[in-house]
Image 1 (tube, helix red, strand yellow):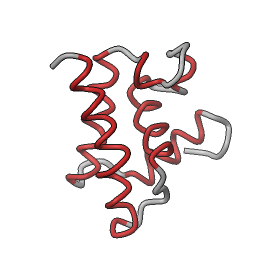
Image 2 (cartoon, one colour; image 1 turned 90 degrees about the vertical axis):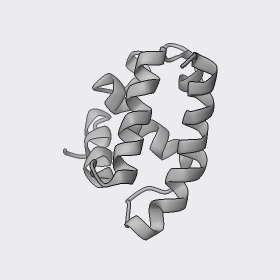
Image 3 (tube, one colour; image 1 turned 30 degrees about the vertical axis):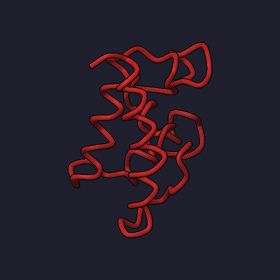
Length: 99
């Protein structure tokens, strides 16, 4: 998959699919930018902005990182990833809580 379809998939996932599921799943976040933060942080294993110099991150992250982030979002949809735990870890990387 080229970078452009990946970006489209990313935007659909984080702007529509995940926010639409948030309330029913009891996830601690519901805004698109929160899902983007969480998934990109985990794709890089730390704060995404330590790895991507320009914004918006999804436009400047490499295809491998975007693919990892999308896969994690899809795992959360399927019940194979805990969005609350992912959020806690993302915040911990940012010094805003503990994992």
